[in-house]
Length: 343
Image (tube, rainbow, N blue to C red; front, side, top):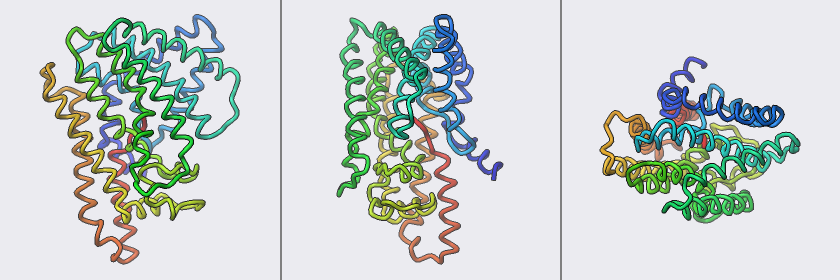
């Protein structure tokens, strides 16, 4: 089982791209915590606790968090100076930890530890001040501020409608997209720091806001069922899982039969297709071996192949003998492992 999961990690682009940028990601962490420690060891330790809690969720099954990888993807697409990219990554990590702190307590309703509460406040203050300096008096300033406000507004909306089931499964697309608008803050900081016009970075980021949330939702279906959080992939089977303890295989089976899985993956495929097109047509003349381009193309390829597989099993699945259904679901779960992505 461990060997099988390890193989899936090797075929999941999120693992591959994480290892590509691992040294830069670790360097940003070190710089952030060193800076905090120079002012307060207690605040630095509390910030590290927030990160460690997120890292613990990255086990053999779960992929790295795309949030930390994101600035390096944008850096590769714009040839941004490495020193400037490192500065953005440090402050982006600080913002990520603040958001993670909020998410943990909004999702799990755990008791707030005073040291983490203070550390999260410092992380938010530091990151937002420094990132804003990068966009101040540029054409990206208003979009930066709008992205932050949209993220807060739709995070609140998402929480208020978590348990609701709608007739249209994509009714929650607005809040699912809006709460990820914080990614625009990173895109604006990168775009404002490049020497060439980088509007395509904004277009690219806007395009992935919903798809990254859908990928995250697919990764967390079991946890969301337990929490009563009816996400877009779960909407069409909400009637079957409400107040029920169901296994991951049952959830996937229900999503397959309701065509929810197919509909979600088609939306992701459409989004990734547009992203790849934006990269190919940008003014930066991006090389075909560019790491960020390879990542998005690999994700698109994996989603495309998964869609083809689902098309081949979707209709006949319900008529298969139970033993055969178990085998098909196992194979489907293995293929899903190749696209799982945390945001």
